[in-house]
Length: 493
Picture 1: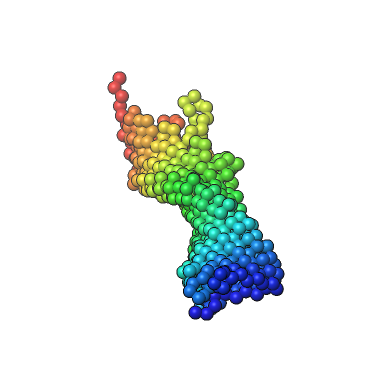
Picture 2: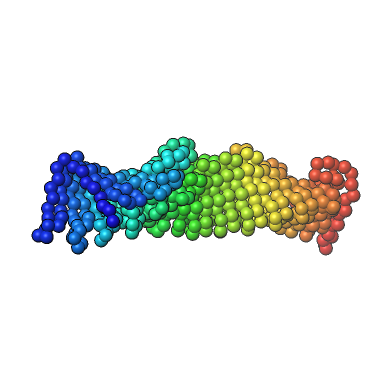
């Protein structure tokens, strides 16, 4: 069957049993040993002492165990059968003390122990631009091998473990990633011997530049470069925001974090949303909750789905889906939108100017900070004070330096209601400065319980003066003479 290993050293002592079969060997000074006739070659070097135990089997002495001290170095070469594979990897193991155990055949490694400041370095054979060096550190490793050819199956790191994934060619998109935990399992692909996954157990923490993650347990899979945070209220954060969820997956390649189940996101300030949210306090935090979330770190995009709600103080938006786009300073809401995002300044019955919140509902909406525009679409319903405006589309323009309405433009089946008054038209514009509503239609119509009805192609409703003026205009931008029809109610004396 051939030899299982060979040992070289300056000094070697051999010990035999009563049957004169080799029982033990001790090698000292410049010790070098390597396996023979295996797909993955194992080498061990140490400046200290190497003890080799054998077990008798018939007339032969089979390799059983090796023990080395003085920080030996063990090299586990990539499989010879996969030398041309881009994923093939070599491994180098170092520790204060190492023990290697062979299978009953004496030919293949079964397990290994590395004790005292242990370190495993995994190096790709082909060091391409997309390849990584991977280093695992812990006080102790317990290593298990596949059934033949000295192929590593799993390294179990205990006592506080740390994995460092370092790109061979760092770039803006590829940086060092670090994973720590109380215990960590490094599993290897049998064919190529590269890392398949890392399983971090107990107080798991992840870091890449300013991106961080924390949970009770975590796993990293090399194929997709995704860190999966599980158990113990997983959380991820960067310089902009912090996100919690039942489960979080962080794609380190695409720089995207996915949250599932009761997600809660906190932007440290309205500024950190990139100006995407229409909230007044620039330095105050913005909160978002939803069933699921997706945060694209590099693009500054946050996508929140399933009962999504974003708020700051008393201002809020609710929707089936909310999207924040930091680079374009835009927010989008889709499905069952409800919001209280801006205010209206109005004159009360005593003549004093007061500010009231405005509540809006629609099928969908978007906010553009660049245009200072809130756009609502589909079953629009806006309530401000005692006024209510409904229609299919509404554009709300905000004042430049505040979140108060400057004007609101509504179109398609527009209805204005006030106590005792109802106006209808195809198009309408509310102007906050003079608190008027210009309505156009074919015709536009205002009904007043006390004063009767007025119809015209263009009507101006003075919301605080209880009067309606018709200029007969043919559109929202032109004025001309036109037919006006008024119906007055006669009060009984």
